[in-house]
Amino acid sequence: MNPINVEQQLLLAIEASIDAGSAIMDIYDSVDFGTEYKKDDSPLTRADLESNRVIMSYLTQTTIPIISEENKNLEYSERKEWDVCWMVDPLDGTKEFIKRNGEFTVNIALIKKGTPILGVIYVPVTRELYCANVEEGKSFKIELGDAKELPVNLFDEVNQLRPSEKSGTKTKVVGSRSHMNEQTENFIEELKKEGKDVEIVSKGSSLKFCIVAEGKADMYPRVAPTMEWDTAAGHAICSAMGLKVTNWETGKDLVYNKENLLNPFFLVK
Image (cartoon, rainbow, N blue to C red):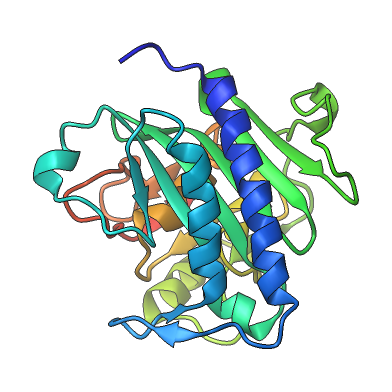
């Protein structure tokens, strides 16, 4: 395979995510989402499928294979030969979409040898775009507003996310205000025993990664099931900021395009 032009692929993924976001919003503003339920009882809407169709129309222009939540994915015997692959969640936070709370995203990442090298998270309702070129160590946040075209200064310093200096005494932990499992509660209790004043910060979908990258939270413990497409783009955005996304048990970085696409529990900090 020819060397990958990461910036070129990042721009393609950004265009795909914004176009997919427009398709999602057309359905979001309609009366009927066409909601069905998968075998695991997770919801599936017309927006998931339409977003996936739009993204595929962009990414199939490349010669890079694609893993998507809404595609029938190939067996590991074939996937394990892939040096590079796309990882796509066309609509992350379908439950948030159905609740109409705006906290859902389009996630696209490019994986090389099991590691995310670029990531895009697009928020259709607010038209906020997060993206990262991991090889350059740069993450960006761009507020598109009413603009029809991408800004020419997309990757300028003015849009670059900077590592934040911890201020104040509170340790902000990403979690659910309404329900947390026992392992997360134990993790928070351990922080309190260390003398930390813990504040819970709640967000839906892959926005959990974004608020850590922005410095609006200090860490994100995840001791509940996620799939690789849920985390790859957020992992890229955090990695480019110098943050770690590590296996809860081993402390090693999460890896992608595994035989089982289910993630282990993990910690972002």
